[in-house]
Image 1 (cartoon, one colour):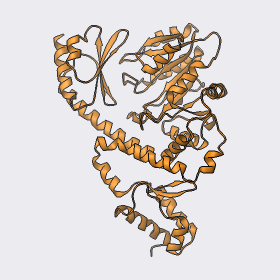
Image 2 (cartoon, one colour):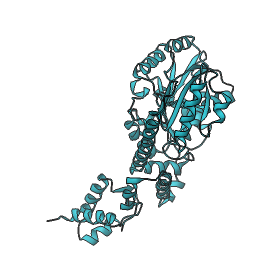
Image 3 (cartoon, one colour):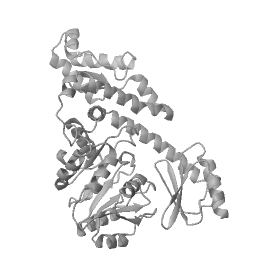
Image 4 (cartoon, one colour):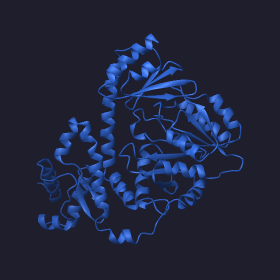
Length: 421
């Protein structure tokens, strides 16, 4: 005989499969279900918790339960159109923004700010970071207005009078380099190629005693797409400890690392790593929210500087992002996006197998990067491409092609022209 709570579950699941319940739709209240099925509220609550565990519904504090996925959405995910997918994070996040406002007038207008960020989002991010093998205390996490704000604050922090310079990879994330140059801050560079960095050179730079930070993107590097091997990671940390250098780990593409490389933060036993997580690549550029994990002894100094920039990081967006993470939408949409990128990368690999490129290359995150000696990127080669970009490095230049419908044609053109040059 079917129990009451099983009947409630079956009816809700049937409603989803028969298209009577839509994604984001609010379910009747616990009291309404209790009256409808002539059972206790505890019985209804048991059914709700089980459906939540099965990722059929999600809970919004002081609001109720909502449908996480309907049958239409489940059907669509089997054959997802890339253009349609771009709308999904937006629609899901809009639902979360809406829910963050419902019944929260008193909460919003009487909120006592926390410079480190909304307590709910810190808790959500704390759980999410564990999926990346970033283990820390909640009090080490600070929510920022994107990774750029976090980087700006770090560059303003005076750690010691004898260490004033920042070391960056070359090439690197262009906004980090612009940040240093616009402030006229002293910095050094170390060349990064498809093979990584020169560890001996890194030690010599650290040994100078001038470096306070080493800014690096260990996995899925921007712009090269490469990832440090474990030996390089361990050596970086050993040198950082030996020469009193903090490592800023920008892990902006952690969600898309198929190899599940361990972050520097996980390997750090000496509180040398400052970990930065951005949500922009996984959601949309307009969401300027990020998180930073700091060694305990740097937290207070960081918050003091942050208080000079903003009173609060956008409260409504913080609440919405917390809901978005907690109800499983972030994980689901990231998983779908990752799957889509993996499919595109497989197509690119198949195309590359048909053409023999005469120079080293790396394929990651829907991006082909070819490493070329100086002088090989001619005007004729540049003008023969409709896609792609040129990146100049100290010893090498890089030709990059993104995934597109024209990818095979572009590879064919490049292969021919490089063999002739």
